[in-house]
Image 1: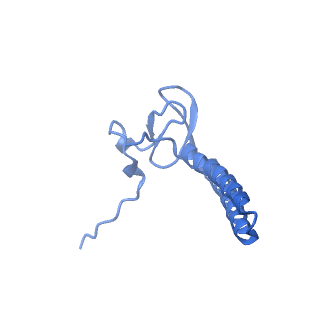
Image 2: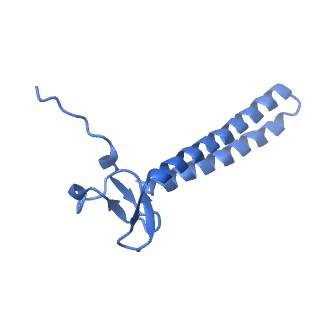
Length: 120
């Protein structure tokens, strides 16, 4: 299983990869100089990937402003936390703001909303 990373850093890494993917897609379009339509399709797809990256960066920026800044008890640095559980962005220490989860093993499923069971 892959090691868990801080949510904000994971989304920023995805946005950065979209930029590189868009550039690679546009670069592949150069190989189709003889067929302008195919080259244009590759260029448009690359630009759409870069525009998607811009949208993701804007979204994570607005999300980051609402994130709760906490001080990591392990390294002492400040990091932003999304959800009930998250990792420190510096030392990967599991963090939680929920007192009922303190001392429990780190699990990403704590961030998912629990389904309400019918009491009928």
